[in-house]
Length: 399
Image (tube, rainbow, N blue to C red; front, side, top):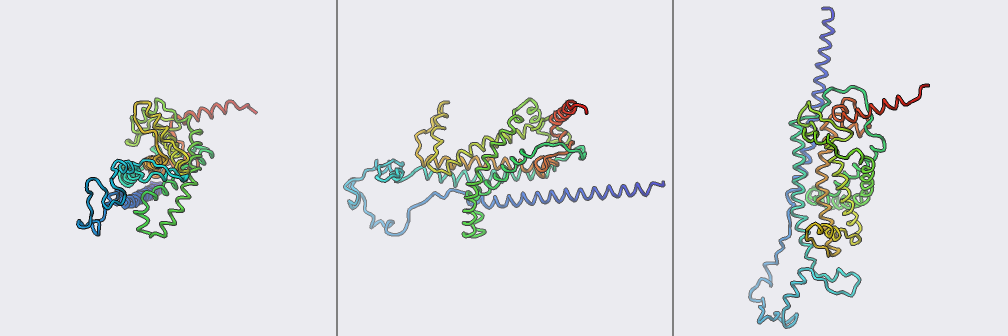
């Protein structure tokens, strides 16, 4: 009975600690939900107007619409004999299809009176690309918000031990953050090109929108180079840890342990989910780099004709004799499609690395993680590190 007040005080302290932790977690959840809601609203605003605006009809009023004043062709002759005595329908059909004529100036593209593929490019960009792209981004944000509500934050089941283990060194963290920061700015400025006139222009006006877009254009062009360098460095640093193995199948079968609070499948330094992210970043980063450089140096790089020729070797029949303008249009569409896809993937990656999992941010923050976190999510890697440390200790000569 003498220690009763101390035990009571201990219970009070534990209760206060529990309440404080609960409030902290609740506020974090509210903040996350607010952030997801804000992003969803911005994307919803951009989703409404993104439809093709290609139905351009001739005027229905004025002289052209007056049946009394419109001359009608007689016997195949052009009305008024302005263009000659007969109409060459086949010629104008060819012009509409984009036939190449002869010009006396160095710019051979001037010989094309109507670039018919430009309308196809515009319809796809302002139609399916913009519409499905925005709904894809809204969908991934909504899914992550719902998952957070139902699953909550993935916590360290055994609690923090206070003992740290180095997960990534300085070079690895520098590579990650250089790639990450440049990618985020590239994503924002790229989305502005596609959706800015629907969101930023009405909200801030043409002057601000113009200034932001011009600055974003230069940022997009120049930050492409550190992004490409970062992707190359990531490939060289981590390719050895991202070769698939049998443990990845177990990890995927258990859903990475995200759907059960007491299931932690075995994994080495990178689990199957991280390997998928790695290869998606490397492959999309490569194709974004090629298409991006083709857009930065117009009419200098023509990757699509040769690419289609290779694809045709396996049974396809894609056009290989493409004009320089067609090459540019294909590069722009492909660049946008791949960018929208990898932005959605990286949103999920950011979620897991921040509010989605306790202790995950420390891996790229300080480079060191709690030993209990490492054992729960990368147990095989921890065993390898401990064996390596033990071997190094035995290898040192006694003084």
